[in-house]
Image (cartoon, helix red, strand yellow):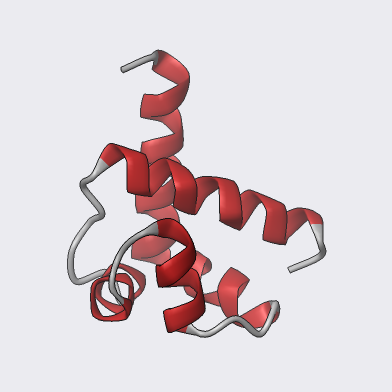
Length: 77
């Protein structure tokens, strides 16, 4: 894992813990199911991340989630 990937993973986990990830998704009116299908996880698992119950663990999924959240922020989430 590269340093930039580790930093991205840390950021996504913080966004999940703080509720920012959910706020970003909801601001762009995307459902849990839509985001989960896009990043390759289940809606249930994504909901648990967004509530801060568990931290995302699978590197590839976290990086896809980070990419999506970053794009949503660029759109004005």
